[in-house]
Structure formats: structure tokens, C-alpha cells
Length: 69
Image (cartoon, rainbow, N blue to C red; front, side, top):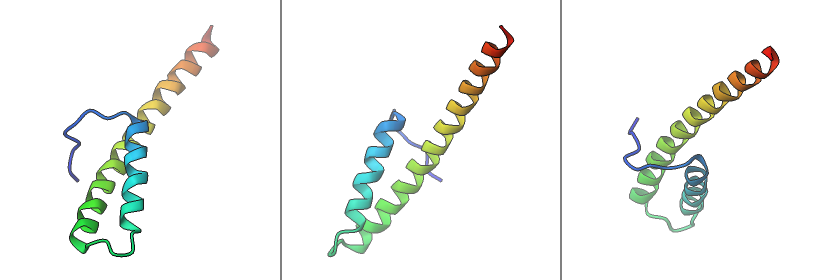
């Protein structure tokens, strides 16, 4: 899976994913572009999953710190 070369926020990645879905759904979209869009989407999905796992861990830590007080 390709790594993201640019800095993105989770929200920016989601917006780009939404745009890619629209492009792939176009009736006359060229197959080469669809292939590239799908590859990019897979990279963005992996990034979003990683971000969500990181946030889940951070929130769990915050909650456990709060319950210890």
C-alpha cells in the first residue's frame, strides 16, 4: 500500500475520498483514471483507519486517566 506523501488531516482525507467516489461513479470515466482513483482511495482508507486507531487509543488513555482521579 502506498504511503501518503503529503500531510493530511482525517477530515481532508474523508473529503478527498468523497470526491474520488464521485469521479469513479461518473458514467464515462476512463478506466485508467478509475484505477488510479481506486488506488488513491485505498491509500486514503488505510490512512483514515490508522488515524482512527490513534484517536481511539488517545481517547481511551484520557478516559482511563480521568477515572483514576
